[in-house]
Length: 371
Image 1 (cartoon, rainbow, N blue to C red):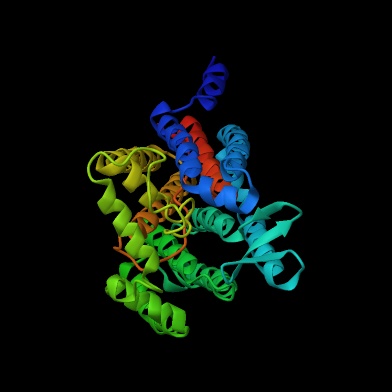
Image 2 (tube, rainbow, N blue to C red):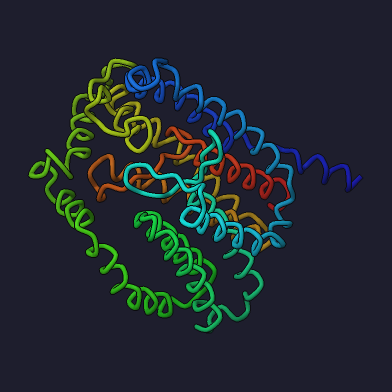
């Protein structure tokens, strides 16, 4: 009787978590088509080029979600180090193989045939699994600096270096924030974390100021209208999109900024297109759907009896929350410009697959680990 109940529990799907995800993916199809139709027609002669690829990615993502929701999360304990090794190998292959693919001046993708994959997306997931495994294993000694901080920041430093040479400073910041917050939640002393952060500040300053384009990007963030012809161009047109949308929006497909004015309108700045075409009402709905997903993630982390499962759920929620916050913050001019997909909504197969996998893991943790 107990076994049958356990089996029944492992296939339970939390609609409070799953429904907002599916709604965002479905809305993403409409907004990607709206944002990319003109550029797709110009470059490929087919207006649905990008949305077709996104639908294929979504179908694959649903399969991945189903698999991860049935794959026992406790097995990720054994996959922590293999995931780290795979992540490092992929980041190395970008630079030292013929599979590295460059776009927009950055070498961030692996390309095999027509398939492209962005390793930094997988790195975030791998780091969450590693930190959860390590903190669970060392839970009684995390307050020691040599145990709670040193090994975890060494792993972070390896990833940071490999991502920095792409270059992708924004992903380093996100990965660092995930590491710092998870260690804080795990019980590492705040003074150790603050000390580590202070030690890293000179490196952060060097990375930020070591390239002229990053300095210009920072200056344009402080006053985008002064640099509206170059570094501030994206954020100026993003703000114009939100301003044009008003309360109710111009209507799906009727936006103006996506027509070769706002770069990356179907990827990094899809939230701006939503602001213009769906208005304040659409923006509030999108934010509410993300809030529900993050709330469910927090609840799953809190209710999970197994410490490893709780850490994994917490890390996944932190990673999703940071990506949402950064993307929206950039689009609204609250953060310096950083190319990052909006989970479930933006065009991008790697982001969608990893995000769907993360939701699948959360579903499995809730089904088999919560009380």
